[in-house]
Amino acid sequence: MTLHRFLRLLLISVVVFQSSAQAGAHLVCLTVEEPNNYDAVNACRSFAEREWRDLGHRVTLIQGNHERPTHFEGFVEAMKSADLLVVFVRRATPPREQIEAIRAHLSAGKPLLGIRTANHAFVPLPGQSPTDPALETWPGFAPEVLGCQNTGYETKVLPYRVKLHPLAPTASPLLAGIDASSILGHVSLYRVLPIAADATPLLLGQAGSIEPAQPLAWLRTHGPAKARIFYTSLGAPADLGQPPVRRLIVNAVNWALATPR
Image (cartoon, rainbow, N blue to C red; front, side):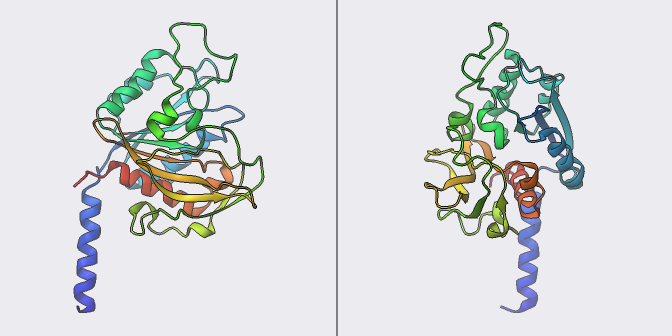
């Protein structure tokens, strides 16, 4: 094959991949500003301004009013036109209709992207469950939707190394342009094992000699409508400031919005 033909075929493959994604999609980011949520509001705003809108997407940032109970003003209305939901919130107890809006989004086969604290997004601490019947918790969100557990920290504060997961597909579009070994996890490696049997792991984190190593990012589908799901436990400000981590999030959005062929 000549170089000219190879480049032409490469260009065609890129165009096909881009055309399979939704242009000008509506991304809804569900987040809250509170001390233990890793500056999530500014993180989502940064992605909206620096990456997602550059891809032609419209972004609605929904910020909860406080930790508990958390009301996400405008969320139900925004979800009526949402193509992708990004969840970066912890231990929220929102009104029931806001949880139902997430369930309806997934039931329609629409994708969801979870960042770090999403693996305990709607699980209050013991003794903090709401007494108001209009408020809702969702303990099953992590195992049922994200496909993981939330069993604390493998380490607290200690940085951790990152590498490709040994089961990661070699040609995954989510890993395009990413040198996993250049990523450093900065704050607290999450314990997420076991992850769902149908999850495709992408990255692995290892803190010192502590075992076992923990999956850091993976993808899967959820429910009969096969809603695309991506989750990463990377998400501290120093994590999200690294170019390969930002590229991972951009790749995840592209994958989530791509039309299956």
